[in-house]
Image (cartoon, rainbow, N blue to C red):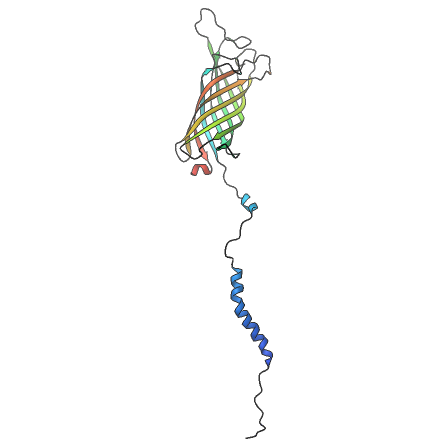
Length: 245
């Protein structure tokens, strides 16, 4: 055998870097893949939360109001009664105050009836003859609108919800009210304290008592006005999240 036989050629070391590169990828790939998978969902910015809109809590009440007496505090009218019927809209437009929910209130009164003495002097004082035991009365129809009001509602979502309401608007009568020298148009102010009793998921019964005042604010010299003690009742229908509680 030839001693001078050449030995088998060795493989070139130039293939080693490629093998090392593939080995490194094999070792690091699982870590890279896991790094791409978040452990939890990313936090949604606060600005995005504010862009999510929810239905506003509101209610529509079909109401009736009457009076059972009058007194002289801010007005001089006497021996008169006031009756109204209409619809009230309440919307939770503001936040909370003293543990109560604050709602915006608006009201439309297609029916307004003033029961007043038939004979009144310039100052709104009722007149009668000596033979008369009672005053002759007459009915004066009108219409009303209340664009401004606020309601404080406590115990929202409970079976019984106390509330306090104050609202202001305008009453327009078909005749001059409380004096033949007064005006057809009168400013109205109404305050009411009561409770709302839940009847079902969306309906409730509302009962309250309060004060109803109207006068013409001296747009003419004769301004007797009227203050009456009032009672009211309503059936309300709820919209929004509050109805589902």
